[in-house]
Image 1 (spheres, rainbow, N blue to C red):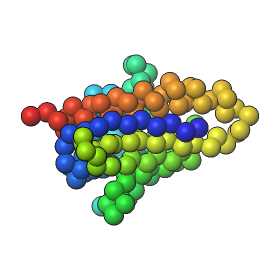
Image 2 (cartoon, rainbow, N blue to C red):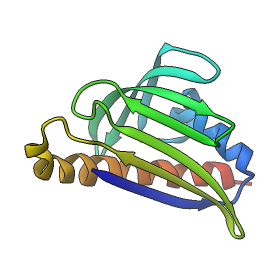
Image 3 (cartoon, rainbow, N blue to C red):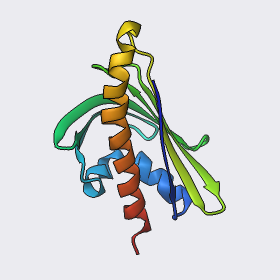
Image 4 (spheres, rainbow, N blue to C red):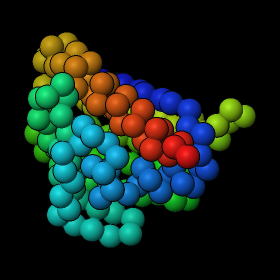
Length: 145
């Protein structure tokens, strides 16, 4: 499964990057996020349980977060459940019209025979809409006067 969501944000790249990296703040401006619990915390690596809603359905996952300031990436690796092994990469590319923020989700299903069934559910129903809302609300938060 490969899924990508992007949006142009009109804010400084550094501010966008640090906002994306600061998971603790997400529930304050992302209304679909229920909570972020830290299991391990550090300046460049965290292990967190993230919980959100998709059209009222509660979802949660445990991830390792890597904050790579040299590469301008925020990366996640899902550690448990159906999405175990999923790699998520946030990138931030300055463009003439703003900063292109992209979230890419890649998952190689552990049971390949189930991939045709699981991909539209995991990618199409959960990941795509949640990532799209995350980007839209982050943009609104960062661009408000």
